[in-house]
Image (tube, rainbow, N blue to C red; front, side, top):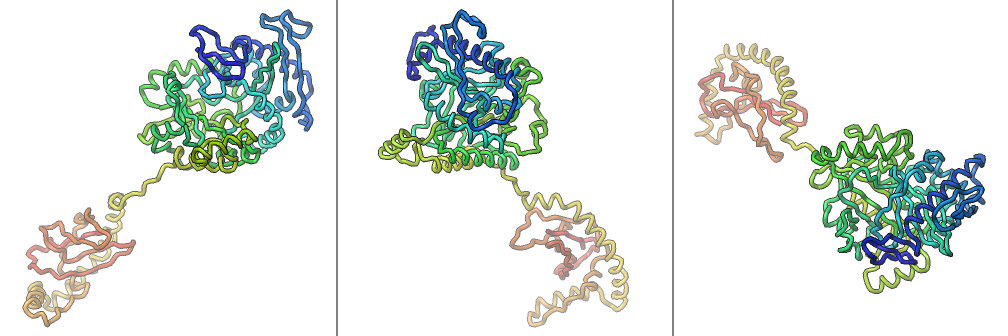
Length: 540
């Protein structure tokens, strides 16, 4: 196990020792959170609804909860503590915007014990998740809580304009004061549902400097990898259909510009990948369904909380996008470079890092030692551009629509060509037969035509006369529509002509090019013994 020192940094502890934060046991923190939120949210229901005013963002309410209890607070077995609530009316509006009713909010947080999660980051923060998988509760530092307070008016404006966002959804900011120690916590949406196994987790910043999971992190049962690990494991990226890719990139671009306007940097994209293979679905299907039913009670569903809901535009719902598998928990369908079907869960995290003086000094020092463009700490505008470029070119990619090859086009159009050709041939052949009878009566014979051709071989100075189209038609007494033939060895640089009757050159040939039909005549160099040797060929 780990212990967390007073300043929030993790340190090694005994195996059975309870995790602590700022010298306070995590069990005491969880109990104080549930008691404090239960009192403040219940007390807030007595206040009438009204529009949020500017001063509401800076209101701080405080209540003292002694262990023996009081007229307003229940008794408990934790040390005495004071519970502060920041901007209660503003956060009540945020919860209503996402469809969270006060009773549901209290039920999720206070009905059952909070579940503690491991923290892969270097901040040393504690993470708790509610038993129904809806909310994440995270401890934050004083500067982060202070920055969130200043961010609230702009955050309020952004949520009003666009509630569909991959940015964190903040539902409450609180502080537990006990023994002279302040433990600040924030309640957010849960990005990765526990009911669905995440085969890979990635924390992506678009940076390459020291962006590889540590050996200690890799030894965990469910490690969180970083940018260099992703480029090694998923070097071809993740593929989406065109509509999903466009919606995702538009959402990321809009969110990054909002963060840039607030001078926020060093944020990450938390990406969870669930592989949809048949073996895993058969093995996990029943347990996963039962778990999801128990963790998400009927009637409670936070609006715009899933990844799929966050990237969709107005007028769309998750139900109409995903129809094949209803137990997707709001994941975004995608495919790997191996063709594996995936469900992706994602959200932007760690946005409470502003480009303050300490971050400017950190970037300046790292830029002297390393390549300044590769380190994670950078000015907000450059950070946003690098983040978006990495996501759009290395992580997320659009499925390429393969153009059908010419051979496939020919195969698909054979039936249509035959039908068209047969109609044309039936109309023209009757005219040929009538004209052939008139020509034969004038003494034109097969032998005379052959003699003229043979004579031209011995007398190259003589140009053989070219028979008219109707004269050439006399060479064909029958026209077989079954001899329509598409040359598989078709080449764009020239049309090869073949006959499928005894290897003889065709004496009458149709050539179909660019949807036009041309009739050409060739003189046979071999005496035709069988009238049926003359065939009709169709070429593309």
